[in-house]
Length: 113
Length: 110
Image (tube, rainbow over all chains, first blue to last red; front, top):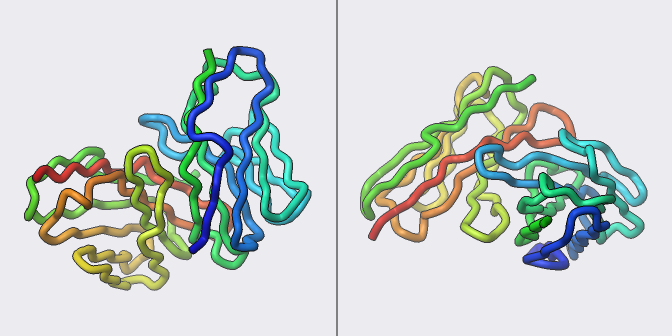
């Protein structure tokens, strides 16, 4: 089975802190994605990557950056956390030719106080 | 900009009832995915439909892709409490990205 793991299920950080969210997949997928999910707004794409060291902005990249140094690992960075970044963060991966068939991690619920 | 609407937004039914949820858009899709998300977990892919008019069955779940590839429906027969969750449609319009609907939150009461 495809497995996508995220470094934390729950995280509490203070305003202004730098936050790292890590995601690892074990199926040699080319594509990796970061979403945030908020009530009433659904899943929104923050960034995605289709290859090592490659990244593309999604719909809401402001306040975030990403890093993909290895194929299996995709990191989301909040440079200076703010309270409006309190959310559920979901990582996903897929094969490049099956971008619609994404495998998700369990999510990280981040609270910024 | 693609407009994507899922309906109903919330649905609460008794075990054994049938239900249908809908996913509609103004755009034509190359494919459409349905996902189910249980509380506290990430979405899990249920099915992909590609051809207009296509019908796929997954046990008690029946998925249909509209003839014009602009809409889709999910029908559940004899719903069970284990079907409880958020059902998300995610069409693909030809880019590397999916657009997720806001979902239908289904509760099946025993």
